[in-house]
Amino acid sequence: MHLPNDFTREQLPCPLNDFSSAWGLVLGSGLGSFVDGLTDTTIVHFVAIPGLPVSKVPGHSGRLVCGKLGGVPVVVLQGRVHLYEGHEPRAVTAGVRLMAAMGVKQVVLTNAAGTLNSAFPPGQWMMLSDHLNLTGKSPLTGGPHFLDLTEAYSSRLRSQFRAAASLIGIPLHEGVYAGLPGPQYETPAEVRMLAHLGADAVGMSTVLETIQARALGLEVAAFSCLTNWAAGITGEKLDHNEVMDTGRHAAEALIAILQSALTSSNPSAAQ
Image (cartoon, rainbow, N blue to C red; front, side, top):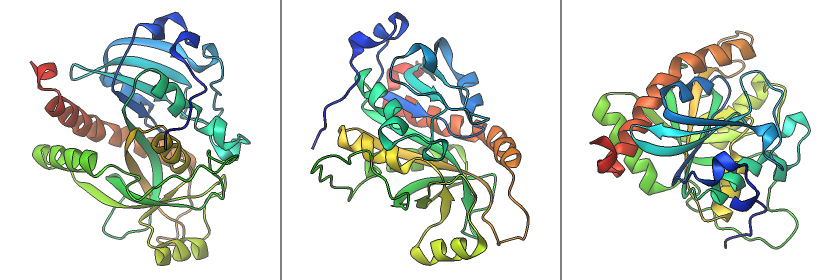
């Protein structure tokens, strides 16, 4: 099932009309510095793109950056909007539809998440193998859009990223992400419940974007920057500033993984 897109290339601002990439990325809280590793960049602010909402959350600068990572063209959304800001699911997933209109076929979603798994410490990355959509929402609401999510996260892309991380010696965990609406962090009791449900990490984004991307026929890979222990595990209080600070420090590891994976899939870019 491929649903129609409400973005078309003809509607995009001029700098975006001439840019095409098979790869798109969405950056989560504190991960905006990822774009510093790009070359040949063109930047368009979300406010200049009709139909693309702008986040007011610190760490989400609201820019679309077209550039190259290791010689491979990429489209990067530097920030996203969230349900907890009062946006509807279609608005939350508008960035995914925009990238699809620009020719993106593989989308990489990133987020900041609390870790529930004692073997997955803060400061490291977890690649999503599956998710729990506990938001109570879907961007497909409004019709009988019965989408199969048996493989929400592409096994082909996961294998590619797993091999890249191993090659350059960067720890990369794999696990289940629980997406909740927020904006409050979870209680210790809720964290225990999520662990019993099989979650390894918890956050407030990504799951709706994954659903939208799969409905458009895109392959999806997703990564959680494990910024803190979830509530009740250590007794420490959770702080958004800590989330952003950890994300900034961890961004370099993800850049290395993605650059290694993308150049290996496109050998001519590495020459």
